[in-house]
Structures are given as C-alpha cells and as structure tokens.
Image 1: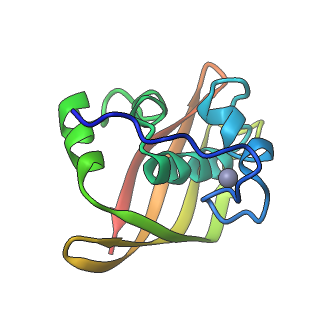
Image 2: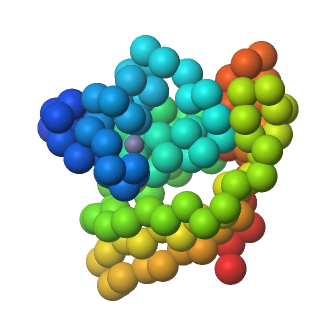
Image 3: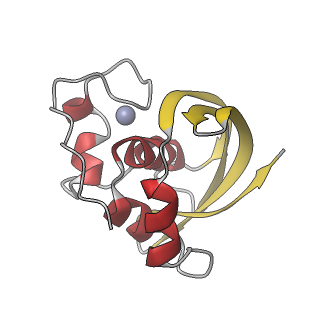
Length: 139
Ligand SMILES: [Zn+2]
C-alpha cells in the first residue's frame, strides 16, 4: 500500500472548489473535528478526500451497505489521478434536519487514461446525526 501523501496545509485552497481555505472548509471534517452539517458538505469533503487520498474519511463516510472493501478503495486511490475540479449543480434536501438528500455534481479528473468528466447524482442518508454517502447514478 502506498504511503500517505503529504497533507495539504490548512491555508491551501480547498480542493473542493468552495473558494475557501482547507482549514475553514473540508479540513476539519476530514480530521473528524467537525461533522459535515449537510449532504453537500459531506460530498465536498469526500471529493477532497479523493484529492488528498484520505482513505479513512472515504470509508467512514460511505454507507456500510454500499461501501467498497478497504482493499478495493485503496487500490483505486493508488491510481495516478489528479482531481481537477468539482462543480455542484443542484441539491435536494440534505440539510441539518433532513434524513436524506441528493447532490448532483460533475467531477473532473485526469488519470493515466486521460481526462475524465464524471456527472453523478449522489444519494446521501443521515443516520444518528451523521451524513453518509449511499450511492450514485453516473451518466
Ligand atoms: Zn472544501
């Protein structure tokens, strides 16, 4: 298994594209200092986790019924992928008082086989106050 990459400093631009710095955006969620208050915030933190290869955050924010195995996820994170941009198109529900929500987004990355544009409608559920990624419909 690959070593963890050097962590991004808190004053770096957050990979999720919010326009904020990591330390005021996804950083505290990845470090478990703060829970993602909304489905969108969790989605952003998961994009950032892919970008910085935070395997633990991806696993714990994935619903246990749909999560990949640690080995499979580690293998996919080990691929040479640069996450270039995240665009959130729309959300439904997913707020602090909801139990479910959706986020529609496009994630643009560049891997060994070229540039990839992934358009997905993701479903999230909130269990015991914690937002989890359930699944996504990719087109
Ligand atoms: Zn962020």
